Amino acid sequence: MERNYLSKAIVLKRQDYREHDSLVIFYTQNYGKLKLVARGTKKPKSKLAGHIEPLNLVDLMIIRGRGQDYVGSVIIKEAYLNLKENLNNLHWAFLGANLLLRFTEEESEEISLFNLFSNYLKALDRPPLDFSKEEGEIIFSIFTLRMMALIGYEPQTRTCLQCQQKLKPENHYFDLLSGGMLCSNCYFARTAKNQAQYLNISEAGIKFLRFIFDNNSFLGKKLKVSKKIAKEINVLASSFVAYRL
Image (cartoon, rainbow, N blue to C red; front, side, top):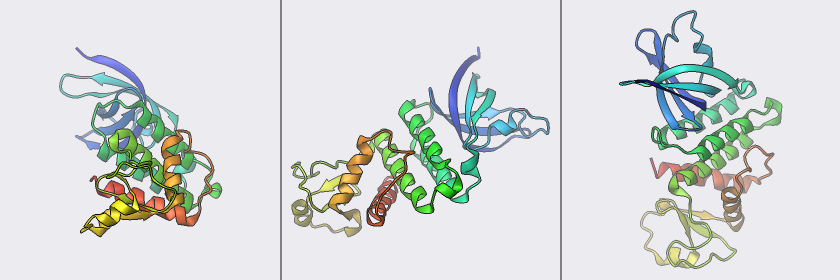
């Protein structure tokens, strides 16, 4: 017997499915990532089609079927139109959606991930004149690192991975493979055959990393980050993800 479920959700991806339907991937508040069939969405008079565009925040009814789950109803709550009218912001939004697609399992509930992505879209939905390419890049990096932490990859930033001593206020090295900081002594004591595995992070960069993980409401606020620190964080975030793909 079919059962109905309700949840807020964000549309991550939509693709054609069979002759008249669509296959839609949602990240839901209550049930995590779901792949659902939306029936009849390619018909001219479809009432669902406009509601299941990627990056829409919606109220979703989920119908559990025997072989396939599908969309019972869907209503837009927020379309993030400012975001979608700015190519830079749209670029960063889709990169965030792609990270959720790649790193999350279906029906693995994580409300914190839903809230994080929702706040990320709100941050990118500022009017275009109030938002620069550089701001988009650093907010994407912050989103990336916070998302990785929520799925179990939070880097160790307060103590050395090897000696477990508290890090002194100075430059240290980030081990991309192991996921955390090495003090200078432990870094230089290693043979370090793969130098690309390590990034030199400044004292200010380490402080900013800690700030990212300690402040859940950080996304969406106006950022004032130096170009040097922003570059460090952007390189670290992209490299950290690349080592886990």
